[in-house]
Image 1 (cartoon, rainbow, N blue to C red):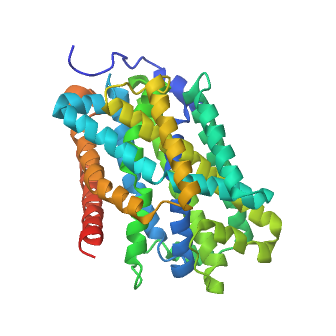
Image 2 (cartoon, rainbow, N blue to C red):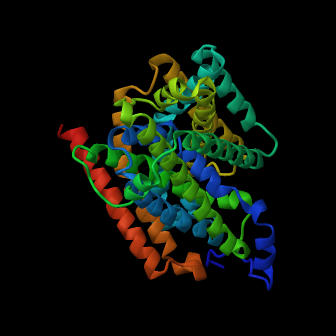
Length: 415
């Protein structure tokens, strides 16, 4: 049959059983949330809070909404399709489309991997007092070793869940310490665009609304082994995981507004915010914050490498399963590349960032359109096909991505 629908009928009482075991179904969206929530996202949230206080909380609400919509579409694609997303696109639009998605995702994740490696090393270095170079190398080797575990997906899932809980705990305690004004927090949900804030709004949107992360959700769903029977539970898990992405970013923004803005401190890295805690709350508060920063950095370091390696392998026709040697080899390539760039240059060179932005101009809107096309293909999706409401939200999200692409074109070619 060519329907592309998995032959897994929804059995009577199946959803009841799934609901009883909901905790066992946490995973894919938490991995997506953890890999998107890296040091870059936290730095932007800190910087916005330090400059504009809580005025731009509403931006996170909008961004997380669009991220939810596209991740949920990707979840349904993973449930409905017998094949991986890139293989579906290869059949629909040909091999060039599959190669473009795979290569584009690989280049984007590899280009920003240096920041994740540096964030991991710096966080542990601050806690231990040892050289950050030592920790970058050590943590990268640890990540490489984890890749060769017998059941890498299961390990990745548990690791990401643990790191998300670690971030939630660390940043929630920091939030309690700062005692922000509840009235100020609620005022941040009213849309305003303060003078000079637009570049930071654009940067936060581009960092937190990750289409590459969203599309990989379909792969994680298939790695998990979910079928149509888990439709309702998997969608709830998707919403919860992406909500946590926004919630953690919001906590960081609120903390920065409460701690840094009154002192007139403008941060250039999220670690500066952690260090700013020490004079007010003692060394232990800084250590607690750095534990959360490590969780964000290491989860992105592992997650980005997994996305880049998996999608490139799939685009080249080498398979997409995390048990595949080809996939593991390309994941290793991303991890090593990012760490070497971080060690040699102390961060991603500006030319590399511009290159990644140029790739993003092409690949991100292309993937978003591809997700919408597949999610509306009744032959593939069957009863999980997009509704009018999902298409409306998806179209609005696509407009946002096209505006981001236009902004990148102006910055790269006309400034």
